[in-house]
Image (tube, rainbow, N blue to C red; front, side):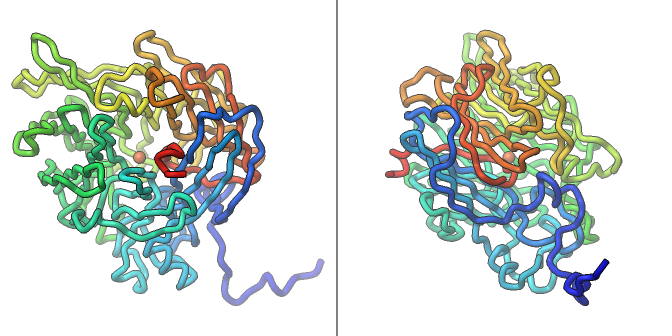
Length: 498
Ligand SMILES: [Fe+2]
């Protein structure tokens, strides 16, 4: 046996650690690609004319300290342009300040998520935002969002990064949520930022962006304590925040510990704000159980002679995101599965009592509704899930067990329906696209990226949203894998001006 002298280097080369987050199906992809005319099995509905944009966390460099959490990877955006039954793929990194600095230094200089005490000296003065969580289309512009930083605008056609944005100088916070809500009646976007008074602060700011993209209204309030506020809820007349005990302790951060910890000794609190009166009329409720809202479907009101009930439809778990941030009191605690719940508030009741009931009797996450029904009662709910009746669970990944199915809950019919992606296949967040602007609720398509794990490849799968069990109407086959992602959105060609 001969030894190749090239593999015994005095200095180690660039190498990702041999741990789950950097190996196998979760390994960094790092490829910026264009594939024109992807292979298509079946027929892409001709109504689907536009682009599906979605964001992911794809680390550019091995971590500074040997490991990292899944959600700290660099923002890599995937777009699939759909036109006349054809599909083109594009993948591009978001050129954040962090990305540009690390590309220049040819190594990671940022350490743990939002922990400047773990950064290398070269990182000083540069923002750590990775812009890796969601895509936001509003006022004719496309943004990559992450809650720990400001929006980055991208060119929707080229995915070129156009720069960090502050909405014409009106965004004062250094942060901005990855989950703004679009008001289908007014064209406004309701958004918020937390930690607006700086790291570990308990201050939250609400923004209303008008249809032109200017922030028309801002209001600040103090949360009961500093916590991760990943998502929120907006109905026609109310805004609701669920403050969960995923808390930040700056002394721990200084010691190099994670930015967030789950602290079940704290109460889950719900703040309800009338949209017309604003934060001066905020009302706080204490949740009878320690719970964490993971993501939200929708909020809506029901009025009767007895008064108004506000309903919050969302996924809730009894643990924090322990795969990413540990339990402060029990480092061995295991993450609990989220279930779809409806929290209902009788706004005339002066007590802080509210009703909690299971909305969907099945585990799930990554919720979506027909966005035309946002802020009013929706009938149809879609989500990612598992269903052992169809096939076994897949090996656990760095963000938990991968989905094997998508679920559809028709509340009016009280029926659950599933799409099973096949052995060794993992669908991701669904994205609903109506057949046309006037189609009845739910009539349309459900798009999802599906990881083909054995083939180390990704597909975009298109389903009839009301008939998931019929299987795909089209499978758009990528010749390669794109990194598992978080949140996406479909923008019609007309809106894009294409
Ligand atoms: Fe999210």
